[in-house]
Amino acid sequence: MDFNFSNLSAKPSGESKQVKVLILGSGPAGLAAALYTARADLAPVVLTGMSLGGQVSLTYTVENYPGFPAGVGGQELVDLFQKQAERFGARVEFDTATEVDLSQRPFRVSTYNGEYLAETLIITTGATPVHLDVPGETEFTGRGVSYCATCDGWFFKDKNVVVVGGGDSALEESLFLTRYAKSITIVHRRDALRAGAILQKRALDEPKISFIWDSVVTEVLGEDAVYALRIKNVKTGAEQELPTDGLFVFVGHHPNTDLFAGKLEMDGHGYLQTDVTMRTSVPGVFVAGEAGDPHYRQVITSAGMGAAAGMQAIRFIEQHAVQAETQPG
Image (cartoon, rainbow, N blue to C red; front, side, top):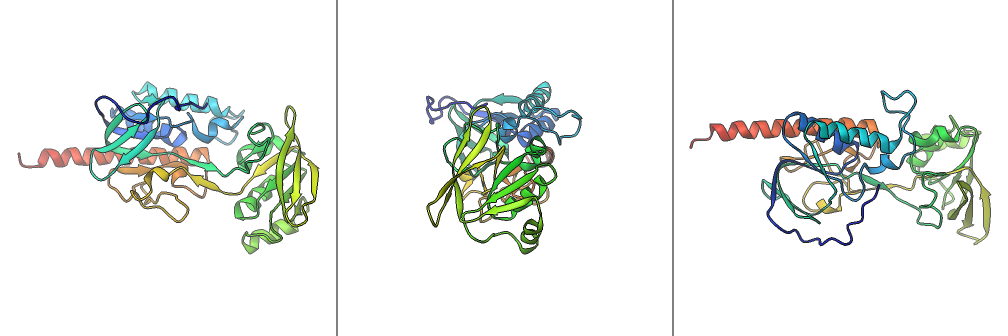
């Protein structure tokens, strides 16, 4: 579910709202953090960002989240997360942060609708798969176009699929898809793979996997679902129409962390750096989910990280409350 904030002013108005826990992002990590901090009576506020539920809300069925033997719709799972957090006092606001000041506590967070002063901040802004930006891609996302083989591979059992990419993720996901798909065609814009040697050997030796080199997808074709792709050779310019039941795109992820550039430590790809307890380079600021996780990108791992971040925020607030009480008056 997307929300359009374009008609709102980015300038906060009115008095700042003081909160003990402010959570940026409303995917599994954010809502898990909200659940844990709400159960500690900290009345967390969750700012949804531009999309309630994050990437999982776009997944038709989640079949690898424990407790749902028959699977569960991505949006349904988000709704359950939200209801559980709200039951204990979390508040979900359809708003997004536009500016943060982490130079002192309480942290100042400006949004489209106002301003918050937060004792602790939990960042769960997620990461966005890099798209091909070709005609048909957006229209058929969830109807043949996917960015997660682990999430959606089962739906392509005994079908023919195409994978775009040539790095580790593309080959790992292609090898995973061999469990389900009849065939996997990897389309790569170069004439050599960028993945590690072991992954390359496994993919090249896999009978279900074939390659189209020096080529890019220029259009996704479909009616009710994807039925073909238009492919162009980048060296010769020759084009072809390639029939397929699905398209998996693995050309990278971009963490949604631009707001924190120069304010929190990041790696070279923009992922926020944390220790094993979800703490960042600024005390009182925690990170969970894909904003700090370039490896797993799963609902269950994001939820677990969110729970850990919530627990750390609780401890941080408790420790500072004790320190304040013991300060000489």
